[in-house]
Image (cartoon, rainbow, N blue to C red; front, side):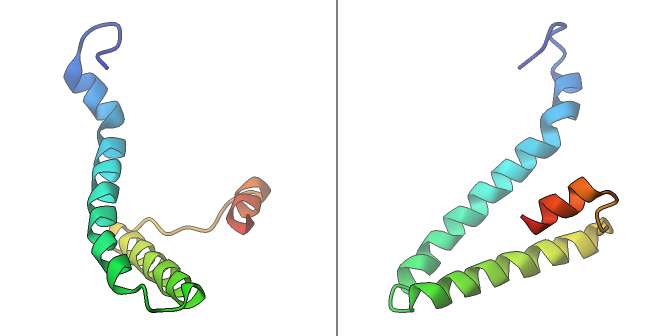
Length: 83
């Protein structure tokens, strides 16, 4: 965790964003569990469509707010987007 020098602040600047994303992901997942329990009567295909649509809209909104929306700049990026 501390690397070779024992500098927590330096290490946190490297991993802080990832830790934040993981923490928010856990919170969102925890909030989604009751939703899935309430949606048991909905057909699985429709539930999947609604869940993935919600995720796509949230990620699009986050990209707009952050100002970080961009198309891939090389063929490998397009291939990754397609898969």
